Image 1: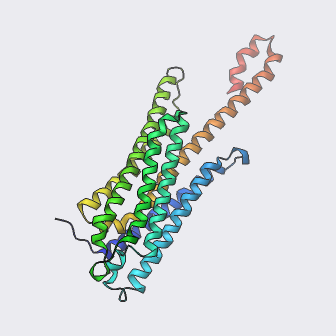
Image 2 (image 1 turned 180 degrees about the vertical axis):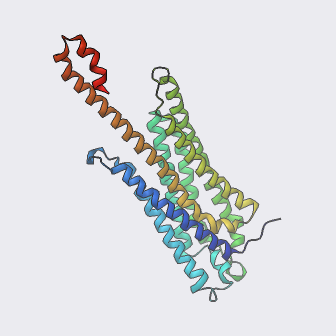
Image 3 (image 1 turned 90 degrees about the horizontal axis):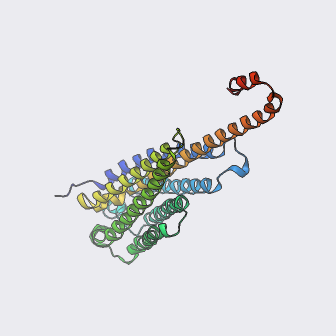
Length: 310
């Protein structure tokens, strides 16, 4: 038996959760930009990461604005004017706000999955390894287009509600969209994690410090976060009510941003640490080169060099 949820209550709770997640994603965006640009020369800034983080922030901000407008329209402005009340208002698939939010979520998903696929290519340096993820990405784009334009061909039932249309048609596109996104994320992230793990295992025999394991954990944590959210919403569609996903699906947008900000921050910190370690090594090597000629004839100075190095 399906669990009955008041849609106006579900939307209000969802909006509060979206606001909390969005606020957290804003903090992580600020941290991402700061980590990528702080004490770095212009040529050393990873512009692709900055651009991707900025696009994710802009898309999540646009969605947050639409959520606020929808809350005002559904719960206050048109509460007693819309046929069927707030529940029918929040399940009206032909509203411009609803279509705009679908477009934003589709664009953000395509951007995020595209970054994951590109990351997989960079790690493996092989075009063959990303053929399947690219095919899945094209499927995501196709189902996203169908998800956006399918409501235009539907007709409302009594009271202005589109719930039946959503169950019979829209749910199919949304489920396929989420499933392909989940498969792309798991497959690409799994390939990246496996590649990092195999490289680390090969080089661990020749050096004592393991530098990439924390980065590997961040990739895995981000993949688990996003995959868990996707699985949860797929379960919500079938176990509870399809209309609940229609309302609560906005929470996926800040979750996508948070997952990618996690990875961007960790990559930037890892590169900054590696650059600092390399610079320190070069400084010590230069210092050693300068001191060595004046100490070439003295065993005592040679013995005392490690103390100077420290």
